[in-house]
Length: 401
Image (cartoon, rainbow, N blue to C red):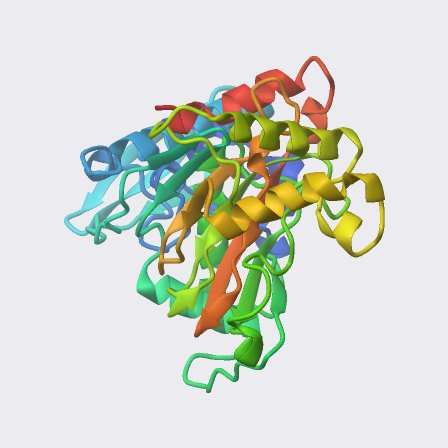
């Protein structure tokens, strides 16, 4: 029989053997580094750095500027483990020497310590990332901006990964748009690259209410070059506007856009219907929302379906309303800024698609725009009329202001 896999978290030992795809050391799962180790610091910090794995000291994290995020991360992981895995023991640490300590697992149903020993490295003070507090930009749809979510080094590494090149090699930017899936367990990544993607997936999961799961797609890196001679011509949102349930992904509920570069000119993310608190909505605003809802009611989730594919030709006036608001600068436009993440919800508290969440990308006039997106999807367990609203409401609690 396969040996048991134990993980300690917040003083409790769990049997995670049923998820060998995630934790088995031989299988190379995303969490395999935690097998037989104390995962308290690693999961609180959402990191698989060797300096964090195998440690239970978290006082410095809970006293940092990101205290609330760390507390939520730990509480969510403990809740997840309690719901998913059997508790088999308690964690006991015994002094070893001046440089560190050895710990062992004491099982509740045996008199002997578990064979798997946990080695804890000395405490290492890691530099703070300096991530800014979430800034609420809009309540309809709910949009947050967090500056310095990614460091310059992380942005640089992700740009190279998206193009499939190595640091030090020249980045050749052509005229076409480039999209690349950034799956954590892709065999082409190094251990450090896997750790980087894993950390980002977990951090975004904490912000958007649920960690990565099998019912959603991986991170997607995108390079959007300038349009060259056509940059100053044509519509502002030249690829149309859409809601994020388009493309055959009807269960998306929220999106994170990580900006891996600043842009010389253009490249903003435009929300033409977003409501701010700066002014009361006008009659034109209400009419625009009615047009947006009419498109959704007819199953239109991208304006290209009307303007390019010819679906619903009687809806051209509704599409024109959205495009016009983009041109006029209505709503909210978020300019790209290296290291920043923008988080927004596609669904309202009642689970329905939010008509305020239509958005599009402004054409890039100069330079190149690098982004990485995570489209969060409702897990299959919550895809029912009774469970969906509660799931969406719960997903917002970590950022509610």
